[in-house]
Length: 232
Image (tube, rainbow, N blue to C red):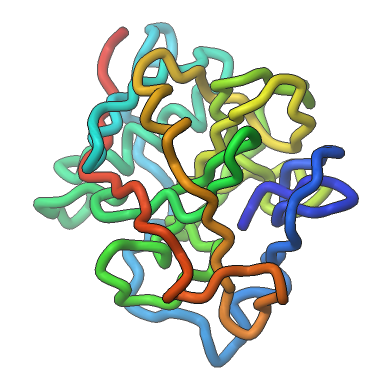
């Protein structure tokens, strides 16, 4: 998981005080023998948006639409989301975007949810690591360190880092959430979908803990079918 919650530790980026189970950092997971191969990666995102304009992200899931009003003060993160959601712009175009089939792999009801790791996907092709991305990271944008309910965050790659993940998204389900990363938007539709999700604390390979859920114990995940960034 990528959002570290300070003393109790989410994974690597979101500092805070609300209790949460331990999840792996980039340095810890996946361990070498678990490192997945065959993931879709890029050197960097192509310029996709007009940074002078406002955008929204429409996330189509297997339970309905979630709409995010995107933050114009985080143009690099918004551009990355738009690039990954538009496979026609890739060097080798494909018929599915980067997010198609990815799970909301981590859910803490009343606290936050997380998605965007390409190893955590519905086909179970890879072992869910919680730290995966598109092959690049991004500079942190903005100085905010606290988020209110429905804020969408690109989490930092590690505690204290000035870099954030290129594809991962954390959505706050509570007010006054302390974090490290970039605020990239606000959920304006589909809140009820996120609030209906059951707790998911997956065991990340050899870095599992006593409090994590095995594959048999995990509830069904919310699955992304498409992400499209559109003019607001």
